[in-house]
Image 1 (cartoon, rainbow, N blue to C red):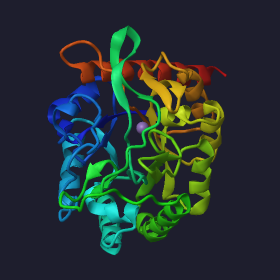
Image 2: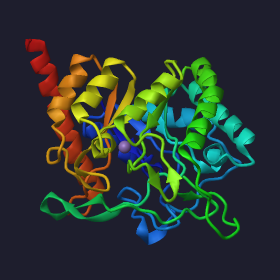
Image 3: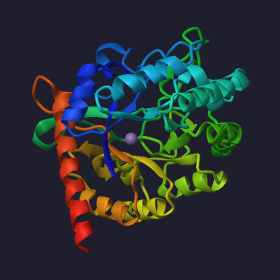
Length: 360
Ligand SMILES: [Mn+2]
C-alpha cells in the first residue's frame, strides 16, 4: 500500500509538493477543478463548504485539460520525487449535461472522452469522479472534532431545491432562467450513468486509464430534490456489475461509506477489496450516520482504521491511500497541521500492518 496526498488546484505548487514528500507521500492525487471561487464562505485552506449557490462558478467550458498541461504537472511532481496517481473529478463545465441529460450531452460526452485520452497520453493512470447531479452539499462546519477542531458534519436532511444553471454543486450557467432543476427519478439517473459508461469505458480501456467512482457525499437517497447513485454500500456492487471492465473501478471513500444508513464498514472493505475493484482510497473517520454525523480525526471516530488496513493487506490491496478531509487544527496553518497529523498516523499504521503481516 502506498501513501499519497490529495492537493486542491491552488495547492499544485512546489511548496506543497515538498510538504507532501516531507509527510511521507510518494503519490499525489490532484484536483484541477477550482472549488474556491465562492468567496468568504469557502476558505482556501479548508475543504469547500459553499452556500445555496454551491462552490461558485465552474471552469471554462471551452478549455479542456490538455496533454501538455497534464504532462507538465506530472513532470513537476516527478522533479520532487512524486508520482501523479490520479486526477480527481471532472469540471462540471465540461460535462454537466451528462449529469443533467441536457441539450449539450453529446458534446459533453465527447469532452469526457477527450479528457480521458489526454490523461492516458500524459501517463496518468486514474481519473476519479462523482456521478452526482447535486454533488457534495448540505454539510455544516463547526467545532465538531476533538479539542474543538473545526470539521464538517451534517445536522439533518438538506432539501433546498437546486437552482437552474447548477450541476454538481457548482454554477455552470450564470444566465440560466429563474427556477429550479426538475427532479430526476432514480431510474433516470441510473440510465444516464449506464449510458455514460457505455460511451467512456471503451475509451478508458484503450487509453489505459481507470475510472474510479466516488460514492455520493453525503450519502442520502435524495438531496436538493435529486436522486443519488451510490448512497448504500451495496450500490457500489451494482456499479461494478453494470460494466465488467478493469477500467470500471472505485474511488473508495471510507468516511462516506461509514456514514451510510446501512452496512458494516469492515464487510464493505472486505467485499470490494476481495474483488480488486478498489482503485484508490480516501481515508477519513466519522462519528454517526446520515443525516447526523461529523468528521473526526483518523484515530477518533466510529471506524477502527487499523482493522480496515489489515483487511486491505490480507486482500493484497497495493494501491494508494490518501487522507480525505481532516479536521482543521488550531494554528496558523490549519490545513497543513491537520494533514501532517493524518499522514503521520497513516504512515505508522501502515508500518504496523506490514510488519505484523510479515510475522504471520
Ligand atoms: Mn471522499
